[in-house]
Length: 297
Image 1 (tube, one colour):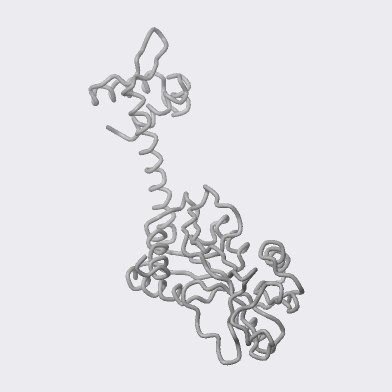
Image 2 (cartoon, one colour):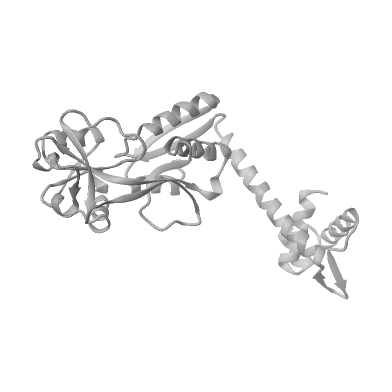
């Protein structure tokens, strides 16, 4: 049995016509008819019940049609992914992560993965949530580690990692730093420091203001290091998420849970990738990262 015969059979069923199926497959009507008959002889079953110039699917034909569709889809995905991986003669995995992320597990996952798969060239890029989303959409990244800001889409694999608590990094010179936690309303008196390039500032501010509920004013930094220098100079507070193990805040910074009504704010973190581009390396890296973030889970 050939994949070509399966394609012919699927075309006949979907077109409900040997003539239209032949045109779709760029062969003659007699040739496609002969191929279907040859397929039936090989299987030893009737797939199409013919009556005059019309035909209907037999129950066996319906089962075979469903199986053919799945196999042809998998075959197409395999071919596309193989071509993509081999397009430049080297295997690549392009990983994106949030510019404000600092959990140690990502570093550990990349180190472990690089050791396990030395044939794989790993490229790393960071960005805001919207920048990472654009990279995924346009093929600039294979997978990204990011927070969930929109409803899950069926076009993507939404691989959930952890439900994380939100914290504020404050200067030790801030009066709020002496507390065990800080309420969202108290932070309205301080500028909120966000990590974003100039062209993405509006989107970041809108999210933290309208979705997270952070009021007050905003100031921006181009990197996490720059943002923490602003914190040390007591210019405002830097929101961070406790995704896995965060490095020590340092002697000049206090890291406090952000609460609303006594309960800590939380956000969902995931690894995202386009479903149509799923491959072994993407799935394995996502699994490696989740295992590090959920030890024993």
